[in-house]
Length: 264
Image (cartoon, rainbow, N blue to C red; front, side, top):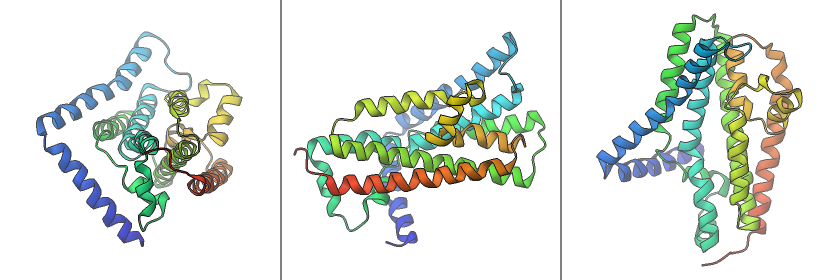
């Protein structure tokens, strides 16, 4: 399939997903409202730590609010495009329903994600954009075109990292069927990068920069937008992402070939 065909496939699928939720409009609205309320936890946490103490070392209130908004936006996109498949596909593998997907005339890597979109993250996406917008307005940061471009590029790379981690989790499900522990571990790992990684030791920073580069979606985009990091520093990070993605896709393709039906 060509790129435009993938786009049309995803658009039609997502449209059906939204229409299914709109069958119960009151429930849908309440869900989005609840997501928005839950997303307020980040700003409330920032207000508390900066009003009762010295805050996060090296971060002003507005800078930390920008970071919090970026984390919220990233969480919303992950909920919208990845989380559903992390839980849905392992269940399909266990009961044998996954087998039918292998008969589709489309490569399994794009198909896996084109059919994984959900509306669960809409509230987080809206809240994240609002928090980011307010933080930039209130902080009066010196933002350049280059810093905006770096922010967007690094954030997209962070999304690609989540894409790769999802491939790893699904691939392990294909090999071992039961993968709940792995999913729980990755959820715990992500909790670490909900905080700026400069509060951790150098070893932990290295892990979240080069081994499991989750910080590309949260910490580094904000640092780039604020002009606190030399762009040259990102060259080895880009190389680490390329290696991470190459291994993720190769591993997923390997597990697809090794897959045998688990049930039915």
